[in-house]
Image (cartoon, rainbow, N blue to C red; front, side, top):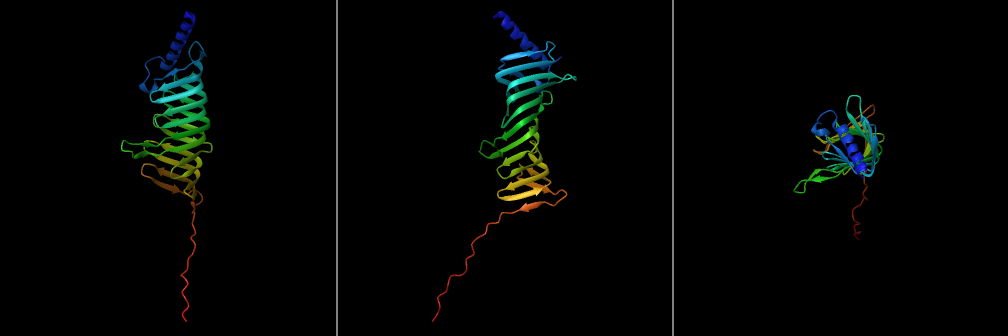
Length: 239
């Protein structure tokens, strides 16, 4: 039992050494794992592997769960963590799920691949007023900047919002300005109306949008409800 505890202690020391590196980390880089069932790797700490049915990684307000994780030390001394198997990321109102997430601890950014789904829950202030409206995005590749809460989605991305739904070649979002851009050609539905074009930018804070044409003009398809025509009431025939 003492030997097992010693090995576990040494393993955790090696893990901490890799995450800390040759000196104190910046606050943005501090993170730790828990729920480790199996831990193995190189004795020099350049490549470490973890497995666990409840494997978790926490860094500031970032929380990640997966079945497996690999820590790689790059040639420049930076560290990359590869999460695989039922990956789930949560950060305040944002959740992201996917098959794989390659995360750089220093830049606090990484790429999700596989069947990726990002959900931003609706948030309200103390008076119950909506601050941010909810969105749901699905794609095959998602570059996520966790510190800025910004993302770029590719590989057939689609998005659903309370006031519109559709997709395009690229969907990008900047949380600081609440700007959502669909580019490379888009096809959207707003209620029952359809809009097609090259690029559209939504200001989710101001609740406005601007669409631009590409080689072809924009195309708007309106849903027009027809009403039954009613004529004047029949007048009695005077004798």
